[in-house]
Picture 1 (cartoon, rainbow over the protein chains, first blue to last red):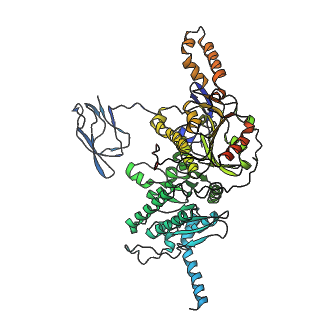
Picture 2 (spheres, rainbow over the protein chains, first blue to last red):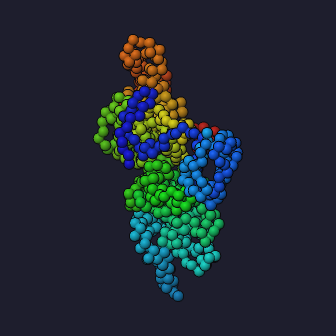
Picture 3 (tube, each protein chain N blue to C red):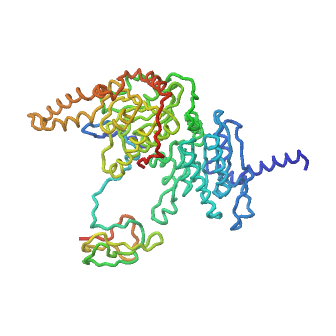
Length: 103
Length: 514
């Protein structure tokens, strides 16, 4: 168990106190960046429909990833230009791995 | 067969069935560090009080070559017995019989004992140790789970329901415990999850042990699914017996009470709380200093430790304590502790247990993670459950009661019956530093020496507002009392509340924020 002495500041008062497990495990927030497309699930890339430099629109097919015994077709959620493609068919991707970056 | 032979035959038949899955399986159960179903029931009950039913039940499966198989008791033991002389119902899954898997008759035995518990208004204790659904019985075993869940829900708030996890409890099986009032777990023995490590590995490629995924510590400290943690099965059943000695055994208002005993701990209650509101102390010392025999059973001791909830007695009658805990996270309200407190408050309300609230908190915990985790929706549960509760509600403000936290912690405004404050109480819209920085922003920034001015303004604010008398002047606090007077005041308030009448509204049920 975590019994670390910590300080918590509320309304400009610094409180002397101890930490607890769930507080230690909290996730740090990161500014979302919708240019970077990451895999939401671990799986295998089956097919990629775009090339670097392509103009893409919201709703266009991006790639197919096989996961949970299903071929999942991933679509673009915004318009943009494909800057970099970081994966190729046959690659195994883990959750959160970067796949495509838009300009 | 003559009569004696028939009796002899019964005794032998009984002995055979009571061997469960046989000696080899029992041996295996022991080797994995677990007791048998019947040993567990013996630990739970007063010696020699167990009466077993449906010992000779036969399973239902006809497919996959199951028809000829004999499954003793169909993998579960049910019956009634006494705990400190009071009757209770119990079922215990027998892992030695096909892994305690749940078939339809197995489930029927459980629902039978649930029905008895409901009809007789006695607690129902379920000991879980099962590999899950008996696949050979197909949809029949699903029906069985559903029948159990329905009864768990119907019984909720009428009789106490306790789940003991003493082995695996996976998939749909976890939902019966989740629907009950209290879940007991034992270190290294209990395992609970919806999808196990194998599935997680196949689907997500992530490797994790059963223990790290859903062991006793995980559920006691991180998920909040478990309410009591024990190091071994013996300790676990002692905890259950202790809990059963505190809680009423049904929701019918009753006046059974123990003799009123003085607190036993030698604590100078006047000196526990540091005057400096930023300094920590253990609020459980206050609880012990005002409870009969200083006897207190804490619920969810390892989860969301920034709030303390549990049962004690004052004047021989069981009360539920809800107390901010400055020792951890300064006693702030956050997502987890709101869930913990709100459910406890609703439990007390359902079972006619008066609620004593001890207040000392700086407010809600600031943070992106808290906002994104839904602290609005979760924090609202405390307001809802206090406002909804009609049992006697008595509040003692020990020290800080700032802002939204003041309102939430059973304030007069949420219809507390009596609100007391200690002379160290600071009931204000926020802490003096924050308040002075806002109210005197201009004076501070325009001063020749802003730090000096800030210090002066904070002092001024403290002097005028960081006390119990502003709230007392408005009648929001009924009495400012010496700490040493607390127990006497509570005894008197509880006596007054005995015949508290609340006019019931005609609503079916509310829609609490989940």
